[in-house]
View 1 (cartoon, rainbow, N blue to C red):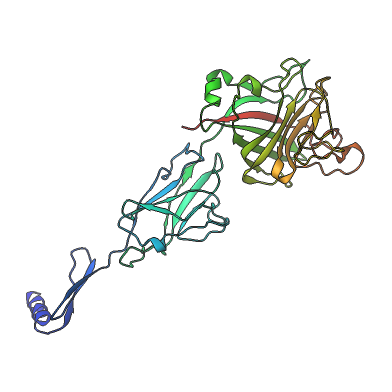
View 2 (view 1 turned 90 degrees about the vertical axis):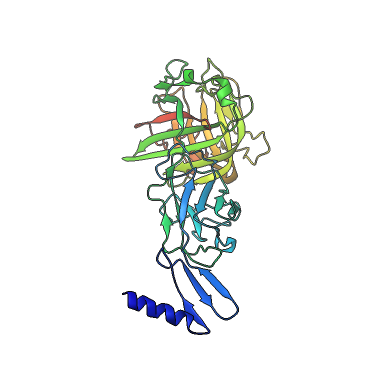
Length: 370
């Protein structure tokens, strides 16, 4: 062996131009020597050092968090790309909640820092609550020497976004006297200042079983100025709670066929204990002849409305009306019945065609940023 090595060294230095490779880590560089110059080329493939704030198995991640990928060495910026115009999976850095059938749209190309070792992804919309996401880095990424990553990197378990807390819950769809019966009330664990803190988000969730299928719809949106715990109580003739407002940055998640799922839209709340008319009053596109997302409450009697709408899509997400009656109006999406009184899209007067009360549940949700 010593003779072979000696002969090899003699050959390297006995010619005017020769290339010799030497590496203590299996070939990390190549050195070329001629009469005038010596050039060393780096050949080590880059690796992913970390995916921070959202590492594997991390839970309760804020839905507003960015995703940061750090590499073992400085990277070629032009090779670090992502999807910025739709939910298709393209680019070398990707984030997905469905095993990369679709990917989270980003607001811009990755932003570099740490001498081009760290790159940050900023989602176009908030992430979805209670959802697990994985991060993928493809072999299209390259370091500044042009070396591509040797194999694709993907977080194995992913990270899970923060789950909402149930603030109030009822499983009784008809008032007992003039009151709503609560099956869960966690409001004593929070204060009005919690709800009014930066980043606080409110939500509603309704569940019901219809024809043997369990359906749900859940909306989460930004809390509004001056919100209080008492204002979120289910509306009764006694508390006279009214929430009639447009809400921002609303996500919609549902398994009901006609509900449009979205990570961010403008929402509309119609919540009160009284009767109401179809008269539109807020110049938001409501129909004066139909009960929809823009009605007028009458401040008398006790019909009751608990409705959440996707205003951008002119669609009812969930409706629980006629609280005083043993046969309430319950539905997801717009009511598609088109005859008689059942033509109203928000399910008013729809007891005959509503989804019934089997395994019914309605929740008021709260998410506080950590």
